[in-house]
Length: 141
Image 1: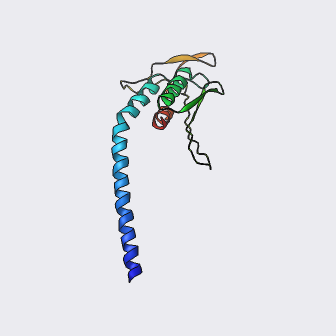
Image 2: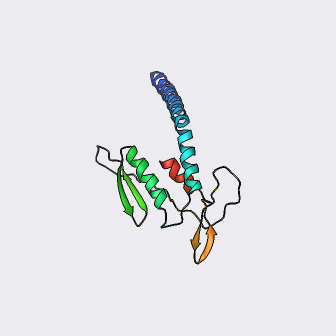
Image 3: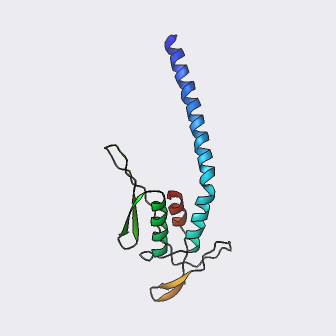
């Protein structure tokens, strides 16, 4: 019987801690939401094709530096690495996001619509983030 009481107490404590953690995550997410949306819309409005992401890589590097994260550039032409060093030995975790846009003309009429145009394979094309890379970068930042 004592074992059941201890197990029950542990389950209730763990459930209460999980609820508190969920609430803290929700609160922190709400505080960041407008910044993430603003960043995503900025990147969406200024798309760049692969190996041409000069503005985007500068934006990423600047934001990482503002967070106190060590930055290495250029990696493979326009790539950015941010190193967040921990004080403990062990495994390393890598988070990554693609930054490139596609040679596609945006058809949707939103305030942050891409009007960018460039030359691609000898033709003038529209450029837009059509597969979520703008959101991936904003979320990771």
